[in-house]
Image 1 (cartoon, rainbow, N blue to C red):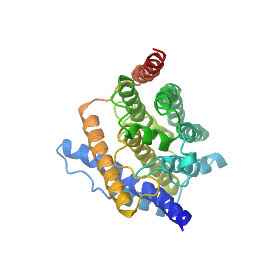
Image 2: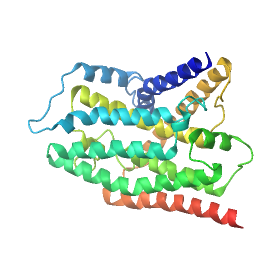
Image 3: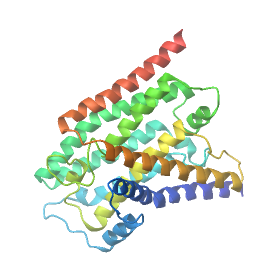
Image 4: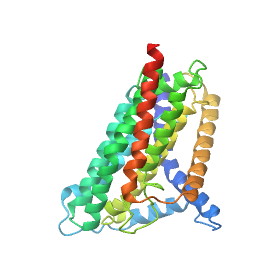
Length: 318
């Protein structure tokens, strides 16, 4: 019975992440609209858009290969698996042994790789521009992410997320400058990886500024629905990852009862709400930077991650 209960909790977490991802995107859009003194779309509008796209037939270019057709499902599957590995409201689940930060980086990198290939598959200029910019961003964002992973691994002694969350929840870690630098670096990477302002603007289709939208311009119907849902999952993944690692309070542990899981679920929902509101406030307060300034932005994140790792090394050697 215990194994069945653990599987039920694990399956519920995977389904919950998938169901909540569009709501997070809708909340960010709603907050941005209200801050601009507009009514904005309803919170459930993202679900309606996805349902509408799923009902439509996918229109493909004549020279589109099998890769172009398969990439939306590959990107969605890799992103969903990565998002499901992050402990949202409970740790020590059935698949927690595979919830490794290195595995999450690899899954997200694979999804980005296939999406960049799909952007160049049809041969349009927009797709090529978007793919080249995406790869340029990834070459700096991934090392910055890896340096943040190394910092957390040095603190917790493991890259396994349940272990990291349990270690960070204890009072022994305390306030450290290295963890503050790692948090800033991870936030900057999350902004870049999700194509948010100031790195990219998901609400625009200007050829001089768009990155992610340029790669998916040729998609429609159910293929576009899969990509849009994967983008929402990726945003939820990063927000949940930041909450799990740096704000780990309220997580239910192995063997906790239904009441503890209910409290943990409410805590996770509150963390996502606060993070979505802060993201909407941040995007409204800053302007989008020029494309050639993005390496400077991500280079700062890389240096912060590297500095955090070096500070931990120095503190341990003294």
